[in-house]
Length: 436
Image (cartoon, rainbow, N blue to C red; front, side, top):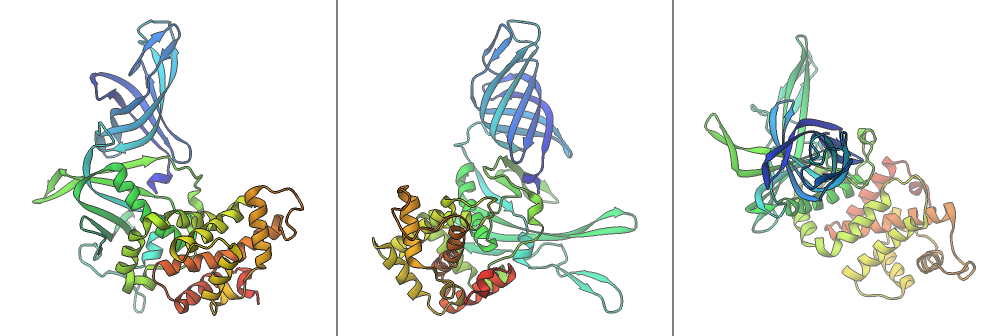
């Protein structure tokens, strides 16, 4: 999980405009905090004034650093100087300690401008993605003696390709193998990942945004916000040849997530559905998912936010569910101003789906609580307002309805939605499954 682990690189750094002015430094990546560059012995921009090194913000900083596999080029994007201290009051800042906070780190390439169209492909992986994909390449024979058998000779799985549009192709791929822990022990491994290829050169952030929409799909399937664990970018014009075959050099991307991520929480995951459940319709589902991105993105992100664990219960958690349900209905059903009628129509639409029908809340409580918390009404203005844990319970009873709406967008019918919801709520041991 490279994106979720601390990294440190030593080397020298300079700006694209002043390649002859190289300054030694240490680069730190803290997954849940920041990307920080400490320079020793000079300023990349600006000048020393008294004991202070005045810095300008830079759109890019280049570096050459030492890594475990050798020497690598590095690019830092959106860099904000925080100044530093000149230890001997030299006006030219020769012994100045300066710092930069940066938004993005690219290991393996110099990229002068984030708007440059240089990349052909992005490859990402996620926590528990092997468990979701479940296309195991390693089989075990335990009858006579314990034997591991690889289904493919070169360790690479057969890729699953989906043509999203004229330019973009989505690919699920993977590989397997083993390595020696010591002369007597070997460790088997399997890796699955997702790729997005473009027939035209793309900007870094265009690829990142488009693959991020699959990240939201996977988060929906996992019923929790899933981070990237690895991100690689590829430029087909920057390749190396091995045994007569050309391989693009991988460029690893790091950035700091807004959400505090604890990688230990991903030791196990309950999925609403896995790849095997949707394999026969995976291409159609992905095409619908990307086609509906513009209209459905805020609804999906509100759903993911609502099902992600929060330490404290807030009224905003309830409103997120309400807004997503309202948004789904007005965007994909019809424009309905009467919120109680909207909810009634949706519950009628999903009648027969046990988890939704059996947990239908008091609609007067839903409507009054929505108005009360949305408009910050005076206490007592609405008589059916829920507070505290009662409000949390109201939101929990509404979530299956919202999940059903999103599953409908993906093409699931009511019978399939009923099966998926029952199975999921049984997995997590929710009280909703017992409510009648």
